[in-house]
Image (tube, rainbow, N blue to C red):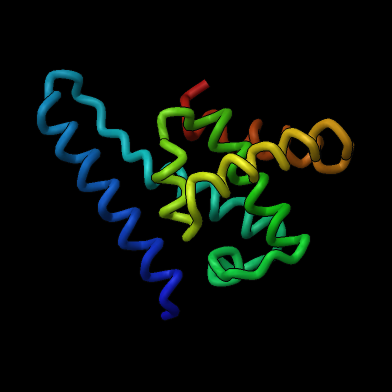
Length: 135
């Protein structure tokens, strides 16, 4: 297992630990929500649909398919999981929070300029929305 993948998994476990601590403090709600697991679901769906591995996604490579995938993940997270911080997203993806900001801007640009990308985004959103936020 490569170093980027291990760092990503550690970041997810740390976030899940924080989530569990918060749930323990607020046990009255009865809800169990794991934001890192939801963010991971976005990553898995995008990787699966676009035939890229998680290892490739977490690599340092900046090729178009990987940059497009990261932008899609950032855009979906912004819309569907606004409570997941930029820092947390960056940790999971092995990036800095400023890189996530850039990925979000790239996502907005692609949605505006590319019908194919926009259609893909809407399809992902429609598929993930019921699972992630229960709409």
